[in-house]
Length: 197
Image 1 (cartoon, rainbow, N blue to C red):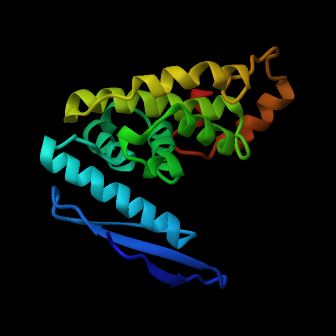
Image 2: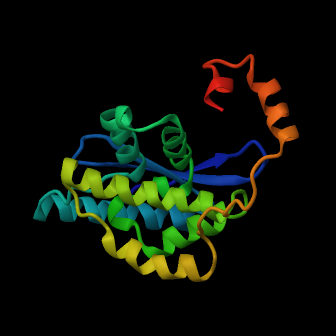
Image 3: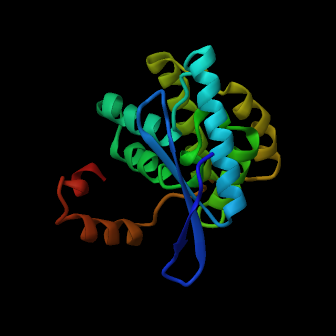
């Protein structure tokens, strides 16, 4: 079992980083934890996963972040900048650090709880839509098991608890004064947003 390395953080706290050798990919894997016990536990479990894959065949597992990037590389011409930026942002959250086989309803729900601290439920809903769509698409393209149960099991909780939601309905039209202000703001913008408005 790999031994964790003690790291001194800038804020004075201590972390533990552990490296293991993946005999399937030929690359080194590493993770950082707050305690030595957690680091040792992860390296032990990961080494067992790799050994099992060597014995029984590659389980075709991938890091969610890598699949999100691969999707962007292959299909970014099929969608707009808004979705592109949403997918970029999604890669910066803890959920992207999971292997696809590890993804569970618990992780999806936890992601939405964290995201609700900084965004509205309708924005958080986009995260889940993109994540589900991308994993479903790339499961067929790359060849891994799509984690359908994780999304199915989390769906009702996310809706019931208001962690995701639909956009608010607009019940009025802009006033002439508001339209005038918009036109003054947009008249110098490119492309010609004033004409589009």
